[in-house]
Image 1 (cartoon, helix red, strand yellow):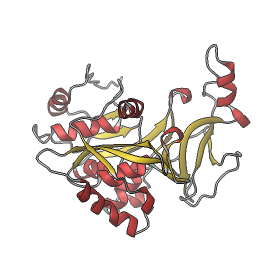
Image 2 (tube, rainbow, N blue to C red; image 1 turned 120 degrees about the horizontal axis):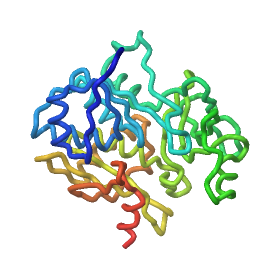
Image 3 (spheres, helix red, strand yellow; image 1 turned 180 degrees about the vertical axis):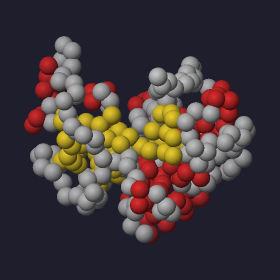
Length: 297
């Protein structure tokens, strides 16, 4: 007879969770990225040894900067992907054994990547016509999926259910790229992509690059209406404790990603707002709907 110990947190409180980590020494957990960020921020006040903790993260895209922090703290982190309609996990991070000794930058990129589907899951990245995009890790498309356990529709909403399964695949509403190893990387939610001057800007990519600045504790990017360009990116930034930020500092930081081709020059935000907290949903995800609503007022 084998058993394992389970530790239930109850209502989330970062200080309480850190105390449980110190006392109970859990070996496996799962959470959304914002929860992990909150734990790391609180750990500056309550020193905690995270070594050996295995964490599967989902519910939102894992920023490379946050993945790097986790690695530095000794956490074995993997990103995963799913949604309520997929019950839930349909993709997960995978690090081959021969790659476990790669440098931290490679590890952060690989561990923040959404990964590959498990057995019985058929997945493709497709354009608006349902055609599969090249496996070049550059061309974007929507994640389409089939598996035996996916929801077949919505209660009392046949029309929405039919739209969900257009072309025989479940349409996730997530935009991603795929590489030659068939590992996907989510670029954004379709509804969160910023269309500026006819060009698409990934809010998640901007959040990832802004979040790599050491003085940034947390960031969220949304599109706001612009009379000239249609939409422009707007960044809400929580500075790290004791740090000072300006628009010029972050624009200079982002310029390096533009110069090396990782970020398009038209993606540079003009609008930054310094906040003490970013709106979250009840499960700890960044609430971009609420952010857009508050900015529109």
